[in-house]
Length: 238
Image (tube, rainbow, N blue to C red; front, side, top):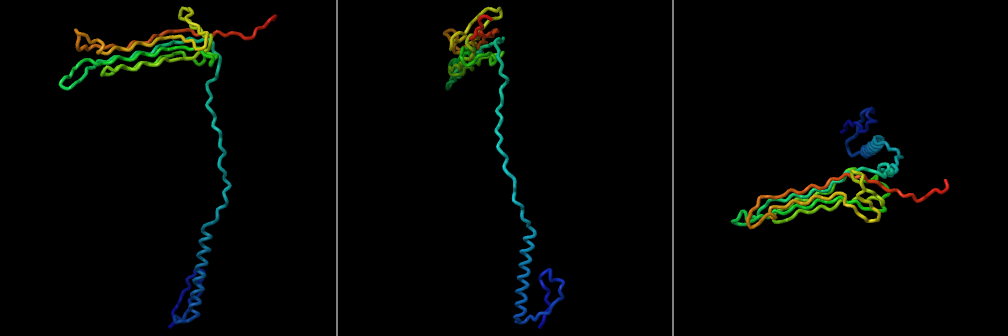
């Protein structure tokens, strides 16, 4: 019995149809094996042609560029400046009452407010100009009181370092202070006192006071700050 066989290879599709004996013919088996090898070879060739080789990359990582440090404002020498200094405000006292079982108002327990911070100038060798001193300086404020007789925290002083030989004059051009020695200090503005809570006002006559105090405001003063510059070299016979 014979059957018509069409080759599987696309390149052989134009060849005329062949009649092969479907029996146990060695020639038929050999032809089938050869066709399979041809198809496998064409598949590998097609896959290789579909994925072209990329050329080796010549890209290189960018060279690290050192960051530019931010520059400060232009430094300049300044030996005179007018400043306004304000001390910190005191914290407010509070009105509070101790609460106990079966006793809603067991007694006043409102704490006092903390004191405001002073503004202090200190002489040092670290500076030789007044360009770092701000025109307006304000101290820190104290915190308010709390219940259970807890007082507010007082603010720390604000310390500004200035060169040796710094003069402070008031608005009447009167000399107030001169810092001559290292570590010498000048309290330019004092902070306000903390307000008292209602526990402070308790007395035999007033068992449940409903009064409290607000914290005091700090001092505000204006100074003309001047740096006394001393020459280290003198010219003789000029």
